[in-house]
Length: 560
Image 1 (tube, rainbow, N blue to C red):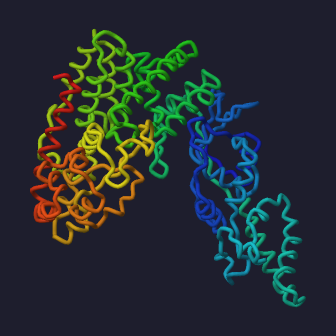
Image 2 (cartoon, rainbow, N blue to C red):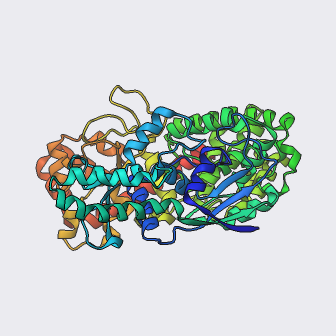
Image 3 (cartoon, helix red, strand yellow):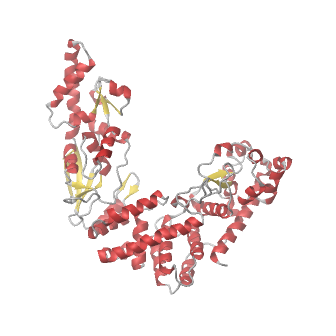
């Protein structure tokens, strides 16, 4: 490990000249203009802006852009700041290929400085442009200053600013020294030293370094580094195959991290999810292209099957890690005698109920992937997977009296949604079927339900109902994401049921208990049955009904 200092202008020069580059697993530039402004302000005031971590890996020859000669120094930690510095100096980094987008970024990230707003040089005002600032000559684009290679150009710039600010010759002379001094201090941002840490470890060691690196709460994971290792041996694969496939799934509502794809591939190809157990030659071209083809066929097939039962988004799942063994299970046994996706889904839902793959779950994933690949048939695989779960296959009534908005109850919330979808419920406002658009076509990707309080929160709080009872699952149903929910909000159920003419059948499809659903037919009975004093009875009856339907749904999937 080596530590050195590089000046801001040197960092930018290296990014422009491709002495440094960014690995394929790095995200795009995501900073907003305010963050770029704060970075400029911190550099001006000589505040610390953090060190940059560079990885010297001469063997890795496939960066994001991967055109022409390749850099061996890669930015591991500091990509956002490096790109921001390039924007401040007006010089396009090598990895930003689209000139038109770059020119738009220059306009969006144009930081301005007021040279005359303060008597204190340390407190110059930095801001983002607007029409008033652009028309005020005391405001100047910081890029005009930092983009100058020669400090001598500041004198003519200072005269230009002073002439625009004042027509009085005496005042111009008085302002010239102040403006020039402040321009010179701004220009010194180019000369600020940034600590640079260089590592040159093998890629396996870098995986551990990445795992321990934490910037703004986002860890660079082991799978990201393995993806880099795959790119070393398969030039162009990440850029031309993996990234377009991942991005398409993300557009369809399945924003999955690299670990899902990498461990699905190792599960299919080697029966392992623990990456340290996968030999390095697994990523050779003769192996990778075959296993990638299998994964690329399996993943959309399984996601399509999930969409058919209503699961159309990664956000609906308690754990996206649970997809890995489901993908492997479908690849290993799908199409073979005895395979039933419903039975696979039964186990998948119960594994999510168990929380088997939440948190640090690599050991569990590895065990289950091995079980799937080593079983003699599909039924044995399911039986052995089921034995490892610590939950009952039946849902108790009182479980639906838990809060819907707690992480530990995401399985029950998912079940509630699946039941509403399964019963072909319709939205109470726009009348469209849950999970379908207004044309009647099923939404196949990205659908996210709107969780709706049947008895509105404001109504229950006025009656001094505790929050835990207000937010319990038995008081929740699902409406379409963009429905006009505010039309229901704050109104007693008896009022909005009558106002929107919600039928008895529509209420039943949302698993509303019989006495409450039947009341939709009579105005007098509606007010009596749906009064807030009946809320506890409603919760108990609906929890019973939800548990009964959940168990029937699971039994139907499991085939028992």
